[in-house]
Length: 315
Ligand SMILES: O=P(O)(O)O[C@@H]1C[C@H](O)[C@@H](CO)O1
Ligand SMILES: Nc1nc2[nH]cnc2c(=O)[nH]1
Image 1: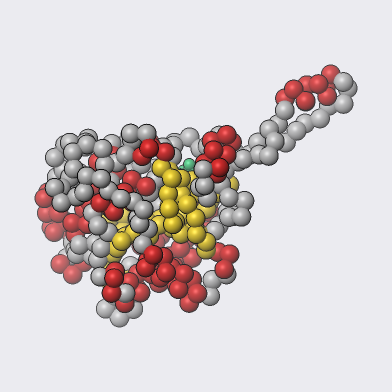
Image 2 (image 1 turned 60 degrees about the vertical axis):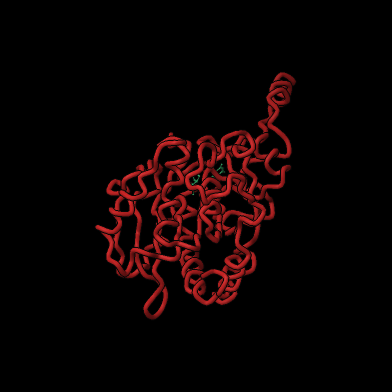
């Protein structure tokens, strides 16, 4: 789907109606599972999985660690809360146009979702935020949005949507409060969860040291290749949003570059030295940290979801 193409909302919603029992098909809470984080839906009860291929307008996720299904189910104690989770998202770097990347968010909104918890794997740009930390996002820095690659480019999807969408209040304070309360009730170490700013880049290349330095200087704490298009559209659809980034690696920003000149000159002078090699990041490392922290992310998300019905402004 490209900007301006008619979106097949009616067909997708009809497919959901045909495949999901009434009790589960109008969830108030949506979850987007980031790289390696599909386990967030493992503890749902009465789960119904709907493969993306059965949903008109949905693409297939091609990234390892992303399954391609919507999971409808119940979570929490007693009767439970009805939720829907995206097991796998679409990234622009896979070749998907923006309307496709954000289509599942628009469908969640049309199913009745009011609150959305978006997760991702991200690289840390901040020396005070180590690998394994969960960062609740308070703001974002989206270079693509500033350079005419905004997911809302093109005709509006609905006349009810504002043409010029403010984003100064994109991240719900009420949801973020629930996250810190949950961390307290789960007796989480204070260092396990922090707040920060997410930089969205297109990928699929990881950052060069100079790019990492630029983003850090611009005020970002973590960087990733997803989430912001979903946030922008969720905001346009009027949802309350919380984003949790799991730090899976450090972005390499050396204080000093390895100098080949120094190495050659030392060798010619008869005192060979070898300066430190730059480290590199891999998607395998990203998935590994996701596996290690899956249980903690799941407990936090479950706890937030359970508390949402108790907060009037989130209804
Ligand atoms: O979908 P997310 O943002 O969790 O995935 C991150 C960004 C890239 O897709 C991938 C890079 O390792 O992980
Ligand atoms: N852009 C980017 N995305 C990531 N996703 C997980 N780690 C990283 C990273 O270091 N950079």
